[in-house]
Figure 1 (cartoon, rainbow over the protein chains, first blue to last red):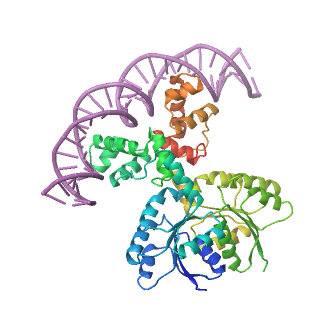
Figure 2: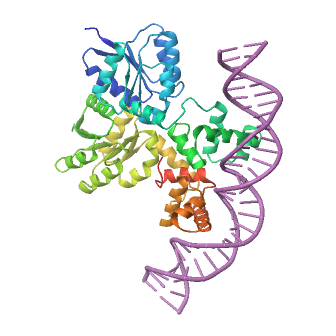
Figure 3: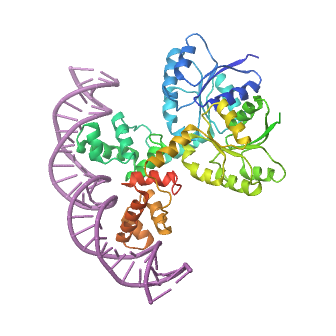
Length: 211
Length: 211
DNA sequence: AAATTTCTACAGGTTTTCTCTTAGCACAAT
DNA sequence: ATTGTGCTAAGAGAAAACCTGTAGAAATTT
């Protein structure tokens, strides 16, 4: 049977090393590359062709979403599985749009990971139950995942979360306080919250802000 | 040299298994027990005496804080290291108060973990740079841990964090909105924050509220 | 070239927050 | 018996938040 060549991209050194060993134990599985840096992985793709890639979402320098996009530009049929924390789950739309073939949580078992890799390797898709549930929940609640915040809105969201008033934000960004209020209103509309308290909870849950 | 016996409590199966293998590679280190369930670990302590324990914070059933407390009741000199995600860092006060001897992030390296285990095993304390930074940040900002909130203030703090207005809180607690505002002012004075955004951050950092 | 999105800005309004101050009542301490 | 604390309440005003709507300029997409 052919050896499945696996690459791992994750900035959590301990986790990455652990996964490497876990996979090393599985028959026919072989880790051919691992790194904490998406750019190094993209360089690696210049001359190598892993069968399956395990990719974290939130990483410094270049995140998993961007790395996935660029990887697919390089090797259009590359098999990438997002391997992330549950807290990153809110980014699954971006990851799926970027073109991942699977989604496995870091809290899942070795067997689930093994299964996911095998399925994706054979050309299928594998998505954890939790992702399916999240999808179901969202569509039940009329959540529109398409409505994403613009860059400016994200800037302002961050400053709001840091406790700045509209006036202070305006001064910091050299724009009118009224403009800030407009952005603020639009953010409230898109996130479907009523006040700053709700906004902060949303921001934390969606990885726009961390406490 | 004596073998260091290590126990791991973490609900993320993949991570736990990985760590087990990582540690297994280190000379004189030996994983004698690992579980996803704090209760099973406490049972294990009835008859076994690990040298160092690696403990996650957020877990189902019984979290790392409670597990740590109970473990120390059973074996007062037990060496527990919190091994957590950065996002769990806000719970460090509770963990430290519970009695952990160290704090290492999951994103740190194998070498840092090895160092932490060795130091704690020899009776010392080990806290990641990130934790120190967080502590430094707090003391720089005139953080006073002495001023404690009254029960009523805690109730109201929680409702504020949930996004209720003073009016709504008043209705819920069958008191005047003016009274709520008084409490609110007192909370602001005690916590030394300027607005709701700051209050929520404070509440999360001090475990009065979690997102 | 046309359409869409984003960023900017303002008007006019209501609601809520926040500050400051004062004060009565209950309860516990000791 | 007095002192301290906690909960309650209120007035009065300034500041900020929040709502609704409009709208032009710039950038981006199609």
